[in-house]
Image 1 (cartoon, rainbow, N blue to C red):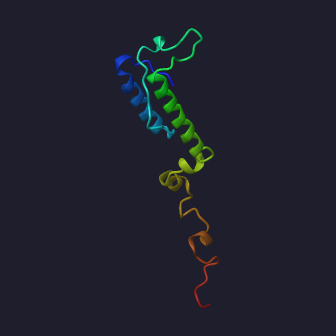
Image 2: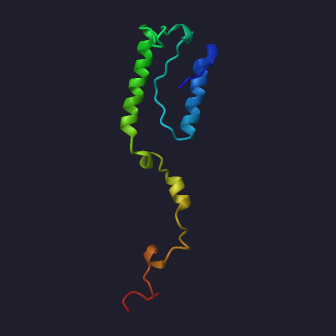
Image 3: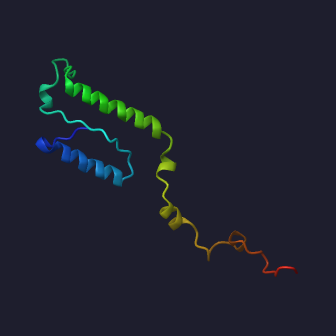
Length: 110
């Protein structure tokens, strides 16, 4: 992801991280900022071997690891009790057998 936040780029990234969490996206704890990024690439468009490069690789490795951990787990990770409770049928609308009552209204022992 690219953020052009100038000297405040970490604030911009943190704001995006908060939005991502709010939308239930997985956000990795690592981040990197490359000052004057236009100077950090060679003529072929590859990033120059420098500490910025190492930090970007670290971030990308962490992103791949998190992706592998959460892949195919979206249903489990985004399931919330409150939402399941809201979408469940109300007890008044449920059939008596679901509520643990006997169907037919009989009494015990009869």
